[in-house]
Amino acid sequence: MTPPPLVSIITPFLNAEAFFEEMIESVIAQTYGHWELMLVDDGSTDSSTAIAQRYAAQYPGKIRYLDHEGHQNWGKSTSRNLGIQQSQGDYIALLDADDIFLPQKLEKQVAILETHSEAGMIYGPTLYWYGWTGQDGDRRRDRIAALGLQANSLVQPPHLMTLYLRKGGVVPCTCGLLVRRTLVDTIGGFDETIQHMYEDQVFIVKVCLKAPVFVEQDCWDQYRQHDASSSSVAIREGEYHPLKLNAARLKFLTWLGDYLAAENIQDQLLMRAYQRALWPYSHPQLAKITLPAEYLVKRVLGSLATAVQRVLPV
Image (cartoon, rainbow, N blue to C red):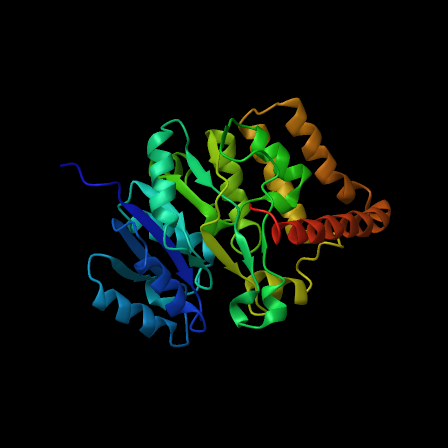
């Protein structure tokens, strides 16, 4: 009897002790049993190194501990690539050290990809998870991310990339993805020139421009919202803010323009969306007026969507 496809789950971590065990236990609790978890230590100095080594010893053949030579810190992209290179799975899943998978995540998504052989990747809406604190006020802030298009559909390139440029809030979270190994190898994994901000979007861009993607309606993962997350730290330190122009966004858009040119992608709708995304950086004074207005509209629409989710199915 042919064994089911192996799923390799790639988790880079750096000083992740606060939520690390909960993340690992969410993988162990999967109803789909044919997985391996690659825990890639990016130079941790807290107890997360010992936690990863303990789980690797407890689950040999299922959980592996990896780190860089000399226990150095090389960044998310390099760490994810190390995990991918050392893994053996037919499918690649990504899970950060503070997020969790719901129990049927792998079972459901593997089944869909096995059915839709033309799809290179699948994802669904992720829960933005404030309620992990147990506080009622935080639970009320929980929201399921918008997809921005009809669910349970196979989307041909480059439509998703056009959508993401027009509506940045619908870009999928890494914990929502399941990707074919052959596709990950084809696109070369993560771009190691981009390590901190937008490294996930660079990966998603390359996937969505290369192969059809199946977008499903169900939520199987929870993206923990907390003050120590990399995105929260970036906002506090001024690296990123939705109301302001920032170097990280410009670096991503510059990379994207070079990539579209190198791949000879000339889709008119995509190029229009790209020029619109680049416009604020060409007109910084006008952008100071338009960005806050656009952000306010998005916040209002997001609040309405969250209210609707409380009374209607996804």
